[in-house]
Each structure stands twice: as C-alpha cells, then as structure tokens.
Image (cartoon, rainbow, N blue to C red; front, side, top):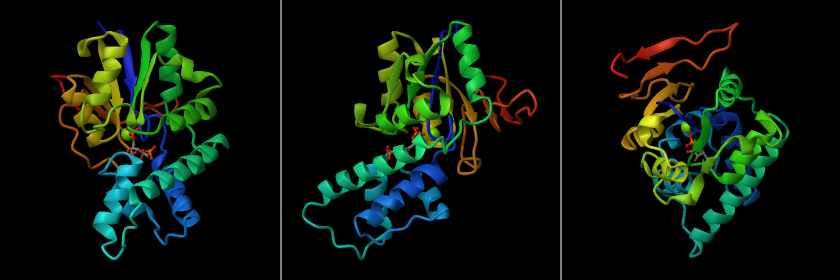
Amino acid sequence: SLQALIFDVDGTLADTERDGHRPAFNAAFREFGLDWEWDSALYGELLAITGGKERIRYYVDRYRPDYVRPPDFDDLVTELHRAKTRHYTQLLATGAIPLRPGVRRLLEEARAAGLRLAIATTTTPDNVTALLEHSLATGAESWFEAIGAGDIVSAKKPAPDIYFWVLERMGLAPSQCLTFEDSSNGIRASRAAGLRTVVTVNDYTRDHDFTGAVAVLSDLGEPERPFQLIQGDSAG
Ligand code: XBP
Ligand code: MG
C-alpha cells in the first residue's frame, strides 16, 4: 500500500530554473569576470545535463571551444558553483520563487493523512533548505524524513542512485511509494529505481519523453483551477 511520496525539487515543487538557477549562474560568471551569459533558450538545452557543476563543464566543452582552461579549472568550477549557490539562495530568501499550483495543498493533505514525505533531487542541499524555508513554511524541512540532494550520490539523475539512497534511508520498497517529477531525466531516474511516477510538466519539459509515467499533468491543480491531463496510462 502507499506509504510515502517522494518529490523532485527543481521544476516540480517550483519553477526554479529559468528565473532562479539561470540568473544565479549568470551572476556568478559576472562575479568571476567571465563573459558567459546563459539566455533562457540556451539554458533549456543545458538542462539536459543535471547538476550545476556538471552543467558548467558541459557548457565549456560544448559551447566555448575558444576558452583556454586554466590549470586550476576544477577549483574554478567549484568556486563558480559556490558563488552560484550563494546568489541562488539569496534570491530564494526574498520569496521570489513560489511553489507550483497544488504543491502546498498536496503536501499538507499528505501529512494530515499520515503519508511519509521525502525529497530526491540533484540540486545542492542548501538550495532545498532555502526553497522549503522561504516558499513553503519556516521549519518545513522537518516535514521530510529524507532529503536526498546534490553530491550525496556521485551519479546524478538520470541515474537512479538518489532514489535508491532515499528508499534505503526510509526502509521502503519502490511499490510503497509514489514519486513526482517534471523532466525526462527525472522520470528516467525514478523508473530505473522501479518507482511509480506522476509528471507535472513545465515550459522547459513539456515536449520531453515521459514513457512509463502513471500520468502526465499540467500541474497539480487547485480547486479553482484544475489541472489538465496530458497523458494517462491505464497500466500505471
Ligand atoms: C535540477 C538540476 C539542478 C539545478 C541546479 O535538479 O539539474 O542541477 O538545475 O542545481 P532536480 P545545482 O530537478 O533533480 O531538483 O547548481 O545546485 O546543481
Ligand atoms: Mg526536476
């Protein structure tokens, strides 16, 4: 029977990418005197690579063949990413990024019904804390029994590792959980861990392949503005 809900963060709990992570990367690049600027279309392509440090490396490899890497390039990526996290969490602290429709309602109802809650994300742990604190509720981190995030596992989504980590922490089998994702990398990870997955799409992910989803929805909906069913799988 259903015992727990496991949530992705970016794109699922909130639309954090275009107006949150992206400008934070750009602010970090400027801070380090780099003329790298990710517009929203380019950022959509870069989202194919999960993890901020991994994304920066991919950008340099793929889009900046002109760039001569300094000998301490690894350290530079680490420092850039640290600055990016600072810019991002500062932005979240202003309450700039709200939760997506239906997210708060589902979390509150799940808690009231005694379901266990967890998070499985590739983003940095500080980012999760900042989003939950400022966009959900003070102390909301404690609503979640396990928060699998960032470099806790080395293979990020679409690898299933972060989901395996959360399942192990909670002592649950995949069949006892339902997961929520927004992207193809996300559902590849959850499916590879054997988890049933509901997808809520966003502007960056609506055309992704969601094979194996229990359902693909516009969002989680609110009573006054119900969600649209985009794809339903009777076998789910
Ligand atoms: C989304 C990601 C992350 C964020 C950036 O993760 O791929 O890399 O874009 O976060 P998810 P960091 O949807 O699994 O939450 O820069 O902290 O990696
Ligand atoms: Mg996501």
